[in-house]
Image (cartoon, rainbow over all chains, first blue to last red; front, side, top):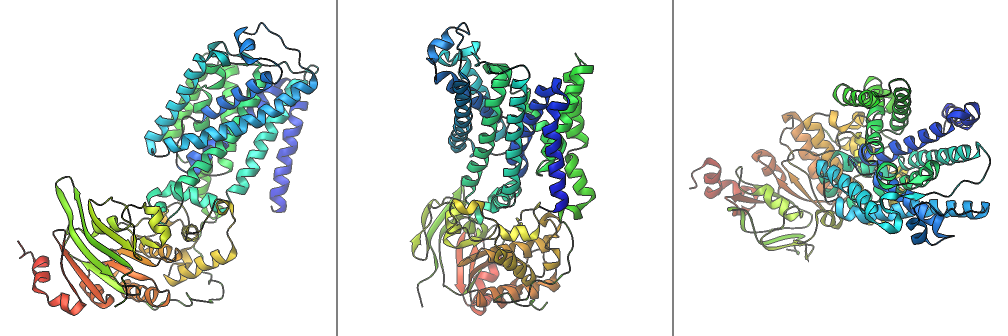
Length: 354
Length: 249
């Protein structure tokens, strides 16, 4: 990392750390902002970098949420009794029980979502283009319906989450930093990942999957790992979000395909897919607009967001980073370079005569 | 004569009622350049697709280094060391030329851990050398999709070389290439064969090119092998002339 880049990252980090102290009333909104960043970053790994537009990534968010909730309750109480009581049972967690349960829940959520993604990939990665999009959407809707019908996990009634121990304001700040840590970890991980062979492989799959196969690339393996990585971070996001809202139910909180599920796509397209910063910028802009319309245009908020999405996909398909790239290709390393190759050694020495 | 590196035995492939290949048998000797000619629609590309595992064949057998490959997937056959280029070029259009070459590294031994490896400097260097070899070095940082058709063909050829195949199947390598560049390309194909030891199996419509390039030529018509032999033999074979001029009926 160059000095300027490091300074830039540290300044953003400092702003992130200061935010809940400067504007404590908005700590929850800020925490949800980090969840949005996670949504866009993980969606872009699939939709932007690999060219597989998933409409069902919310599945892993919901799975993570439920796995975490069940773990937290399950380590101190019988789950079936707890859910059957519809929230009438109040458990007093000790601090230790609460945080141990939460930590374990987050870990299970991350790995659980990842395992499900790996398993689903065998079924869904035979599909391409719109069929994959609809297939994943179907999987997410099916998960919501199955959860609603499954009494052991609370069915349509949902699960009341354990109450956070600690004074006023503590809970908001705690989850704010947990969400921020998850988003920053995801960013750093992808930043590293996009510099390895992995990124070239998934870009190749995006540009021409048949050609990638013809070169002998293990395409199935790359697709499975890409989706598992997305699911891992989405599982964490779901686990944290469930605890922030304090109540988990299938349709509105865990598997909201029409809100969060669409936001993922909209944010990435707005910021510019296939870049590391595009999703982050898109999430920032989209979420800010969303919060503003909810405050100042209440009643019209979905129409405003709908218009934004339409303008984006009709007139501004490349998104913000894509637009910058088309204006300043050299910033992205696109150039005609007349420099000679490194000292011609070995076999390909010298240009063939023309 | 040594054992053929690629052997096609009695391969038949039909699409619905249309028989694209009927009982096709041919052999490619290791280290040689073998040509495949024939009028449009005679089944040449279908045969290539069958050989590399793109199409499941209806009957017959395809042997690569003596091993049956007719039931293997495209990826597996590519990893064994038999690769093809496409008639309509296929490159990774949004990636630059260097990246196109880097991802074309042989995936023969690549395990799970290799997925996350950074790019070793030797790989970048090799990519640069190959781009120099095909004359695209100055374009190495341009997206492949911005190159002309002919340049994309050269890039695709470099990608194939990067993969270090034992056998390379080229589907009309000179189609769409500027006539002044064709000689350079013939020269490069010969060098790839001689210096890198890659066996070439080439579909070509340009008679001057294929006569100049190949040591042995097969001619197909109506899905069948019509004639084979040295360039001189095939050129003078009346059946081949008939097939091309349409007297065959």
